[in-house]
Length: 184
Picture (tube, rainbow, N blue to C red):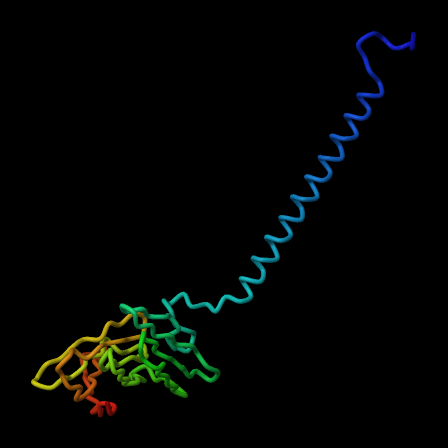
């Protein structure tokens, strides 16, 4: 006889209690670690936030939103000093790129690119006061560029010639910029 009431195992209960306590401590440590990782990630994301709540542009008004039209991709990026660089990629064509040291609210910066199998395309970035960008084509034809958050892209229809690019301000004023098509 051991001196303990029947049905009660002293050694077994002590081991079970210690194991449970060990699991609880491990779980608590794991939860604390998860909370610390979450807090660290949120702190880093807050520090990296560029504040582009105005829909894809930096505080200086430079567009930063990528535009995808069909298979073409226009990618702008802000530079130091309020400038912007951008490139346009199309399958089967060389990447075209340009930079503007400072993009005024009433200005556009663009490239005209030609490829042997894709024709001519115009891509660029527009200042905050630009309502739309229109291609002026031969035969009194025009074509509006696809434009989103200051980034635009347009393809010249087959058989048409690109004569100029017209920028239309929010005030309704227009400016036509003559262009030369790139050589074939």
